[in-house]
Length: 201
Ligand SMILES: [Zn+2]
Image (cartoon, rainbow, N blue to C red; front, side, top):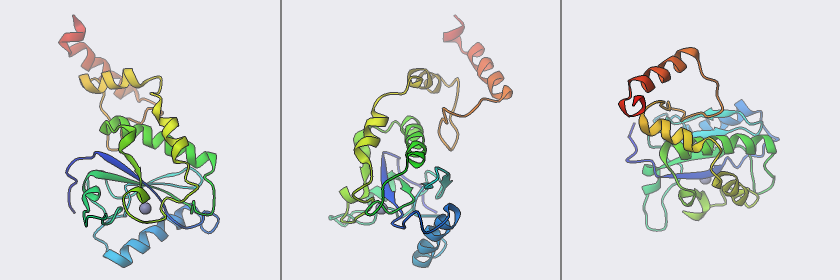
């Protein structure tokens, strides 16, 4: 296991398998099997996150650990494996279009990752802009995605403030702005606010 230097980019992929061929879980296993055939089991997966065609989010390689999702660029440089998270959508977008349910899940995931790692849109790249590959396919809705995540969501100022001041913390899945809060978590937030000098004053 090798640790990433610094998460600065997100690279977008497709699985290249038509979504009509496999159920989500089989699709995930098929991606995993292909990797394990090539590299043995040293990596959990070649992507950090996989978005199913029904919108299910699958975790692959833990964030912060390197996995070989990009390959070598024209300069024989594998730097993006070291500083980029790989996000893969199940499907073959050379021959099919992304369904709204998958799109929505992807947007949620990307918004969370953008906040967690402070990644601007220009550091969210399609695989085929780094190396010659069809991935993520001609029908991959890159421009729409960029538009959807360009606008700061309504809560972003509050979230950034809370993260910056340490009032709330994300976990390994990021901030997860759409998830509910436990009473214990709310108590921790109130406690931190009360004990934070700057806010108490
Ligand atoms: Zn790819």
